[in-house]
Length: 167
Image 1 (cartoon, rainbow, N blue to C red):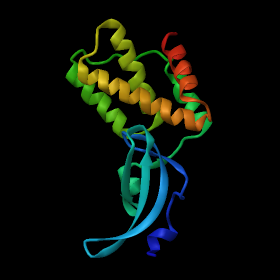
Image 2 (image 1 turned 90 degrees about the vertical axis):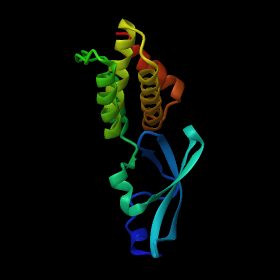
Image 3 (image 1 turned 135 degrees about the vertical axis):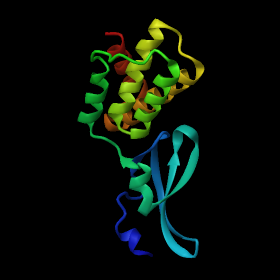
């Protein structure tokens, strides 16, 4: 085993967040040869997309793989949905770019922000297809991670989110 394996941040069986995909589980940590050098990989299964990805341990932080947030952070993100909505650009392409950047940040707070702004925008005018997909993705990411953090069923988290959105 390479020295990477000894310094792995995550353990087999641990739930993690994979950027823009949601919660996954580390199925194994394996060493493979890549470009002639031994490289240690996390093998991560993503239930939401029924997909398995290999992430080099040394690049996991750069890619944005992170642990599940605390219950307090998840609750804070969900509660932030009730905050006053900031003014968004009128042009949907500008809004879309801004929201994509927020999602790329990969924090649960940014997922909540995208859900909040696009939900309220959809109450003013129907969202274009790309923005609707972005909203659905952000909502799923928020619900997925929050349900793990709060040890609650996704349906319950969804009720909590919509209760805050309707305030």
